[in-house]
Image 1 (cartoon, rainbow, N blue to C red):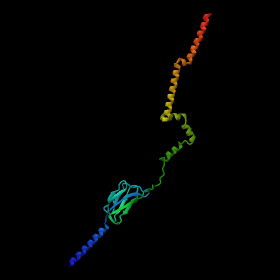
Image 2: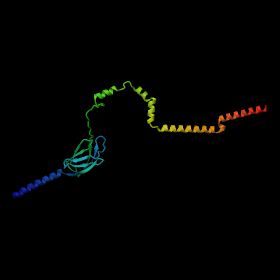
Image 3: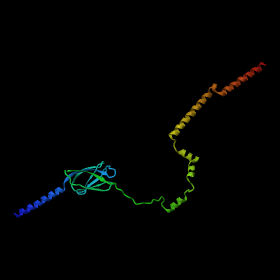
Image 4: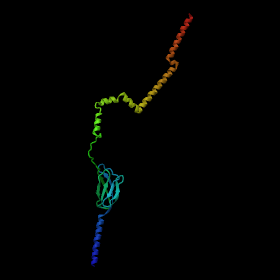
Length: 215
């Protein structure tokens, strides 16, 4: 009888502990979306780790959505490049589903102040400083850049624009048509003033010759 009493007590405490453990480890479907705190945009491909259950790892999709099975009281860690690590403890809710919006903060890293030096050493700085053209102000540089030699050098290597090509073609066509009209004009004897002058001279010489023959 004594043995049965102890056996009943042990069985009762085991059952009580199992019931308590089952209540603490309630299983539910945990879903949600990961967003940024500044703009509310989704944080895609966020790494999600359940630190309370064998460090099981999940990943949100490109829209920041996730869904997996977890327990009440589990600590869930959210990590993503460029954002501070965020931890979320699953609360005890009614039912077997939980939806939540996870807000992550952008990670701001302050770099130490640096002073850039364009020269590797003081000696190189001294050489560069001594070679500076101090008297070459903006006006002198502008005159040098606008000189005929400078413009010719740039024109030799720079391609023509569409406007320049159009103007050149129009001028060439106009020059060709003008030369064609002039050639046609002088090709016709009736339109050639030199031909008319030669004809008048011949007529004049003919008249003079006829008069001298009459005498």
